[in-house]
Image (cartoon, rainbow, N blue to C red; front, side, top):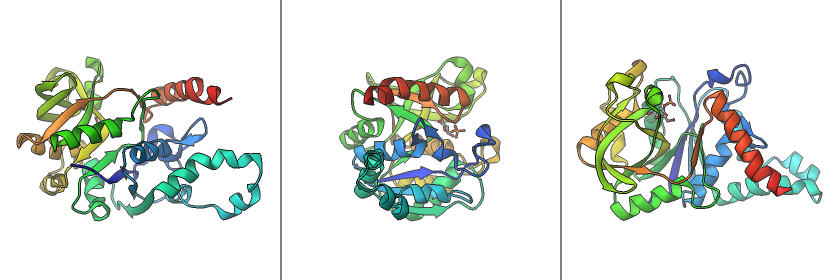
Length: 278
Ligand code: G1P
């Protein structure tokens, strides 16, 4: 199973970052000088997923503009030393295609993914939640690692990490049987359980590589935790049929949906990348 497309749900309000996100999409918040979503698109592209499918909502136009040419600006700085600052985004926009659709009501991650079906079609696809920033400066990005696992096992894969018990209620929590050092066959998943009901401390982060079968499960999924259509519930159905692997990825993950995680990521990126670039 190989994915050539990657979906980015990007319709959420980003209320934790108000007022910064009042008129700016949270996916455009920068880690130093690069918007969060650009890191995700770069990770997808490095994994061979060059068809980028973004599920947006009202007030998200800046995302479309970011992955397009800005003729006026580019003409203005052409031939100057400032052009170097556009090198990475130019590379991405020439390597990838971008398509967009809009989620009309905020009915949960599962609903956003179902909305993106029209862009993805009947093919395996990567799914990246851009506010989870994953960096593996010394090796392969998380999506690239997952592409290798999905190809080898011909199976859907989710990325997981251990979290402290007091954090389990923030995540989809996974149980399963060990297949390998870093691989589990998922037997069940539950969305944001209270700590005393959590079946483990293994949490899914915002990286998924899914067979299109997930759409059938999503269509049958009723509103769950928080009254929203939960991707985790559809993944649980996939797991029940023995078709879901959980992969302990190599690298660092920052929860940039929270202020603390965002600051931590900024610090890390500044110290390990920006300041080394001179
Ligand atoms: C979403 C998913 C959750 C997952 C998390 C990873 O939650 O619903 O299962 O563990 O992303 O960041 P959110 O953070 O959007 O509330």
